Image (cartoon, rainbow, N blue to C red; front, side):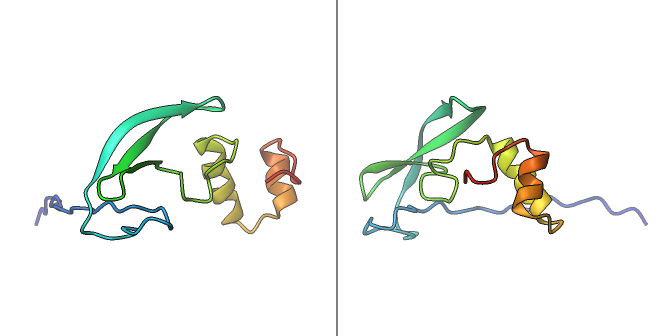
Length: 103
């Protein structure tokens, strides 16, 4: 028998990730896309969002551990993959040609 893959119809809800916002993680809040930006260290376009009820903007990395970091998404992806192999911070820094003291 030949089975064709079925396409899943999954809807993901967006929510405000700003901890100080009264609508933080509320699904009863309209979050819309609000432009894009790039950083000087990475050419990957990053998404901005607008919190409808909280009336503020936030970036896709604004409230994550990646906010304010100066590496590229590619470097963070590589770092995560290497850490899955139980490499030390110093070994990962050596592979990525980075200073392990800066994080």
